[in-house]
Image (cartoon, rainbow, N blue to C red; front, side, top):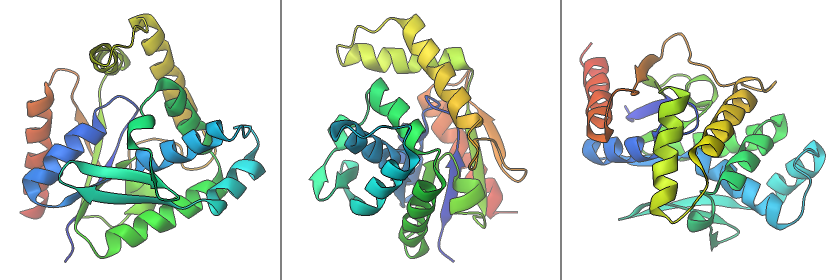
Length: 223
């Protein structure tokens, strides 16, 4: 049986970094599906496409080739062969990703692609609809979360390290806005599935969070 682990959670919960470390410890790949939506959002911004125009965004999704590749440094995300990994972690692209991810046509295309990737390769897949849509039969499902303040603080510190001077209060407002958009969208709104283990990392540091994920995986596979 292929080892597939599904992980969902809100923005700033640390899914990408925690999932990457846990996947490495387990000896499997990590698929960051959020990066794929970010790649689409970035492309829409670059091409001047109205993010509120569902038809235009869906047409764009079908016209471009969003792919991923893995190397020693983890996942690289590409659009039509162009590596956009270093361009998709800004607040503007984050909000754009949430906007384009509302649309049913976009999500159908993305889910189909993600399912094909996970069908033949052991993976820890993280995103916002993994437990519900992408890997509904995954033997391990985790909903990774933390308080809005804790998530904003972590994101703020990451931005400071990169030289970004955005105030913490602005980052917090963006996190809360992103939560509202993700949790209230009509198509697959963000929420934990009934069979997911809820892991709140508000009081945990990075290493503790990774170890908690690994314990959940171990416990599930030894039931």
